[in-house]
Length: 236
Image (cartoon, rainbow, N blue to C red; front, side):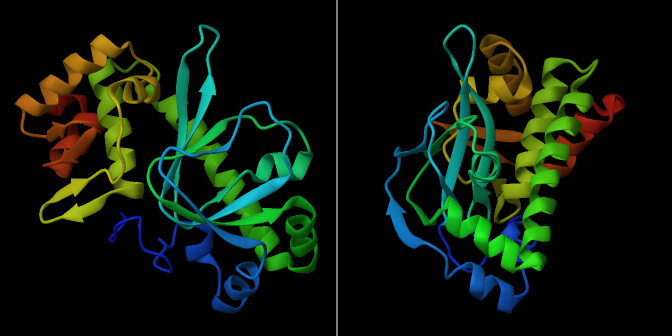
């Protein structure tokens, strides 16, 4: 679980790409490209466009969304400081598979494709770490799909919130805050449920004292209880 807010640089979780690199490799990697600040709401990459750069996220939070067949934006993933964004298009040269938007102020190093791929060829250790990061993202996506099989909407929502809390949550006393604005439509997309169903599930979790919600904010009040609801049907 993240121990610091996502606005801090150089305090990346060990599970992130930057947090897992040894100091010499990290310093070489962070010499690539140019550091650029982005304001909240800025679209950093757009689905289906052809662009040839990657983003090394130093601080802040971005969300990756994709357009559904009926024209809605589906939330695909959330990435924070320490993560790499845009590496798939850089590797295969294909169009972007998602739109990436800053959820708040973001700082990143913008690295052109040729510089990125050249560095990976010269630095096998970092190349291995990047590959492992890509595999971890794919495994997490597959696990989420499998775990949802046969679950009701409240259980799926609890699993989504628990996963976010464990990977990106920020401790605030005994509670855990999701450190970026998240909407009910986005939660519905992640949970694979209709928005009214998610609204009902949120009310149920609030009534049980598991979460507290405000305008686009979610705070986990009882992480243990949330885990029980997510993974032990007898507890709900």
